[in-house]
Amino acid sequence: MKIFILPSWYPYPSNPVNGTFFKEHAETLAAAGHEVVVVAAEIISLRSFFASRKDLGTRIYSENGVKTYQCLASNRHPKRPEAFYGRYRKILKALLDTALENEGTPDCFHVHSSLWTGAALASFDPDVPVVISEHLKEFLMYDGFSSFQKGLINAAYKKASALIAPSTPVMKRIRQYFRIPPQCDTRVMGNMVDTGFFKPPETPPAKTHFTYLIVAMLRPEKQIDRIIRTFMSIGNTHLAKLRIVGDGPEYEHLAKTARDCSLSRQVEFVRETGRDVVLRNLQHADVCMLYSRMETFGVSLVEALSCGIPVIAGNIGGPNDYVHAKNGILVPVDDPMALADAMKAMISISGKYDAQAIRQEIVEKYDKEVITGKLEAVYRSVCG
Image 1 (cartoon, rainbow, N blue to C red):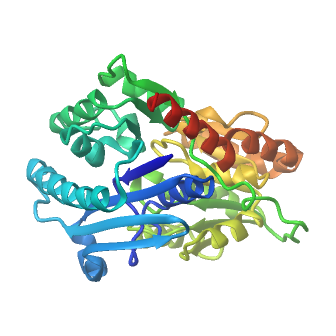
Image 2: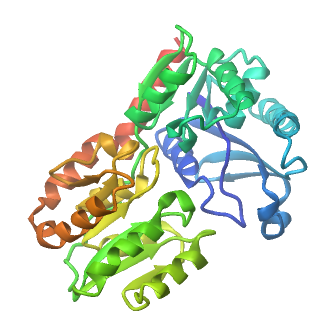
């Protein structure tokens, strides 16, 4: 099949981790024998402008079997969402017209996020089936969208043939707050994971400390500062470390929090990016953690489980679909005592989990070949 993938954000040279899941999704479909074209328009924030200004403009390239049309523009309307959307719509239309002229009409469009790409594509009234996958955490927030945004989301759904949510809680909220027309098929489908890459080490590493691992963008909603403060009673009484892999705007605050808690030696920051870095740290960890205010899926947790590592997760959002007593602990969000109890408990019970069974469940549910098969079923369905 010929599939056009339209992501609302996508990697570019100065920000290679931006939307890496969408890139892996496209390349996996291409490896499965489909003709895949990515059309990625994005307006970057003023905060990102100076780091990314050399990437502004349009570029067309092929990589790993995927033809990509990408346009990056600066945000001229940071406080005017209607004007922002109007400009974005024009940029996407010009980019999509070029791709259609060069590549021909696809069998279907697969849009990642109704804001802003899904809404813009719907306004073009495409005569091709449209599949929308949602990813925004705002679906899990009370009143997470403005009235203008809600209108755009409903307009996107009106033109969709299928709607995919990454977890059951996200789909529940979508059904609760938005209008899904009868002709739109709805499915819950987790993100694909390369379980052939994320796997246990052939030889278990020698360990001198119990290691809690966090793999995440360092943003406020991840609540990593709460984990650091909770770790204070553990790090000073046990041979334990808290390793944080990732980067983002919260780094300075988190580093200061560790210093203020007298945990400079026990809390380590790894600001490198890339899945090789993630795998290396997962294979040396005893437990992986996410304690976000909301999490639509939680891919780092699933990658940890694929490595046979148990997890601790907040009980809001995606982790509810796959974290249970046999692979980890779900903790009520905003309950520091429960978080502390879970972290302490893991020191004594982490070795009692069946690592092979933990991994096998993830292979069966989220391996990239499994998810590719589910996506192909959706594409066949919407194409009649």
